[in-house]
Image (cartoon, rainbow, N blue to C red; front, side, top):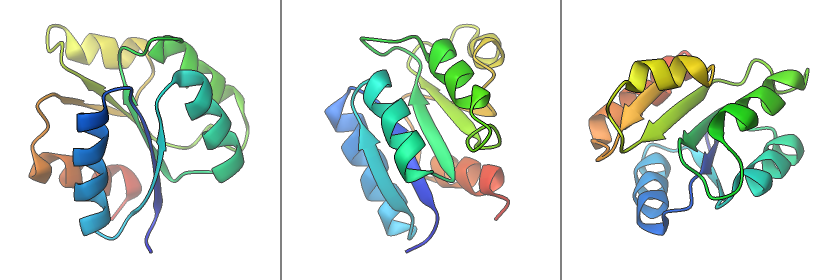
Length: 121
């Protein structure tokens, strides 16, 4: 398997599509449905990249990224923000200190291109 990617998203259909596309490109995929679960998995499984839904039911994406960047072991892990709300998406990504962003619906080519760019591949 390739590099490890953590998906933090509460929408099952989005997670399944992302997982399928990433596994087809030889990435190992870890999934979390809540921000709390995502932080725990990030801390224990040390992903190489995180795909983070902008709107989660329990914790704001900005708070999640802040928590991850506070950890010396996770501070350099790139975070790609995923959102269906394309208005001011660049500002939202900047506000959350995300490395990049993808708007839903997610095109498979764009997903892999952005993942590879963030992983330096």
